[in-house]
Length: 159
Image 1: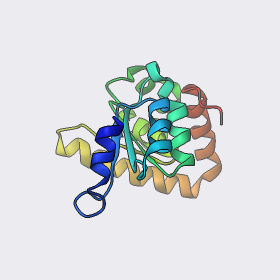
Image 2: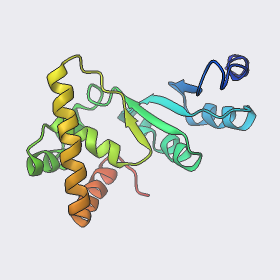
Image 3: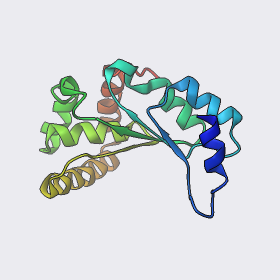
Image 4: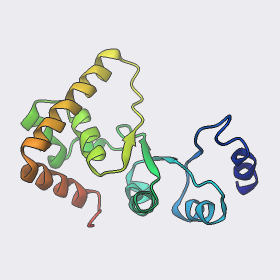
């Protein structure tokens, strides 16, 4: 990994704007950051229970200005999609539970989502939901923080 990383560093910023890595655990990410000249700009990982929703990786990313990109967000998390916490936001704003899950994951901070839909209408609905949640969160900060706090507890993130 480090041999490939060092080779790619030679192309930044002239041919490659940013470097990132996918499917990376916390220890590998820490090792890269410690040994590399150019730190990763983004890490793309599955967001799912088997990795405890990457709590440690996401914390490290937040502390080191690395963007965390969640993928497999819906497919790997049918229980989250059906959860009370996600359903509460979906019902309150009349959005799909899938879009509500996306919005809650984005609300974790320093996180973006790779949306794998092939449907233009689903993508448009997701964007509309994002706008609804942004407006709701800015106008109802305390209620949003309660919902987000419940979601954080659901995924095991206590801080």
